[in-house]
Length: 425
Image (tube, rainbow, N blue to C red):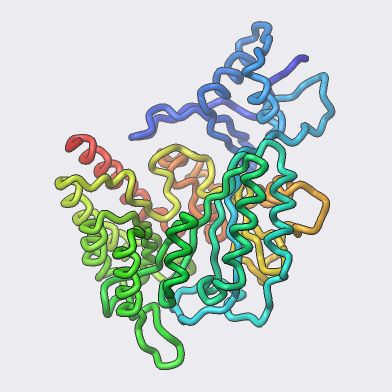
């Protein structure tokens, strides 16, 4: 079988602090389709470009199939449409309910508090679809809403059934709950502990700062004290949640104090800029700098920053061509079985497909890949091309993230923390 490199792509290399030399292939057309190459893929591409006769070994065949699927290589002995390669891992947002008991100022779920009900066979339909994905080894599912704990009784047993179904086929299911943690019962935390469900809790500051954004709509009361109490319950029962911090213009001055508390408790957290104009780049820089000082202090007493912190969608641990998995190996599943590129498009945007159709779930997800294309010329040349990756494709302006100026200052500071951690190891 004869393979050839598609010369619509070019092979490139870019040196990135903390990542070293990043090898990639990219098109120079308006779309700018780009892929980061791992060592095996790079070796195959370089062999094809060398001009010498390339005879692939058995270990190269999976790489060639993946490169052919992406159009990077072609084969004279295979049909023009390359066969679907095996997909080992999928990442899914699974909407459990649109109901929510908070009214957050920056909420970006367009279907929030709709009256739509989850179809009763959603979990079983998803299970059938996952079992049909070629080569699948693991699935990471975010159980979300709305507030998923309000619908806990309707999905808890179904998740266990889905996990057993996949386990029997050798597919691991990793589940994580995305919650405001304002609702908690003994049955719920016993379930978390027994079933090893990860928990990510939204918290935007201590006391008043959190309560500027995250309030109960009936009386305008803030949610901090309730969440704090429930976090203590989880801690007493041996459960360590991750914390999701969304920085806005209102709460950014208080983020440093929250981070200090999280570092003291040795918790994982993610600091994100609120999308849709709820925070300015300069304000996000200030929030990050407050966080940076607290994390730096924690590193000196053993806090492993590289294992504990995530900043927005920045790929600071490993280079990536895209800021998220959506459209490649990830998607969002809505209550009716519709498959969306992202949960921020539920009922507002156009779905990629539906779980009921005959097409492979992997191929349905790939229908959204084009969303990642069209980066600005500045982004393509930027030294942080494979760290920022242009930011969220749904919020780009003129082909780049509105947080571009902030990210350019923040990324080196994250690498400073990694260097500091290494020095104290």
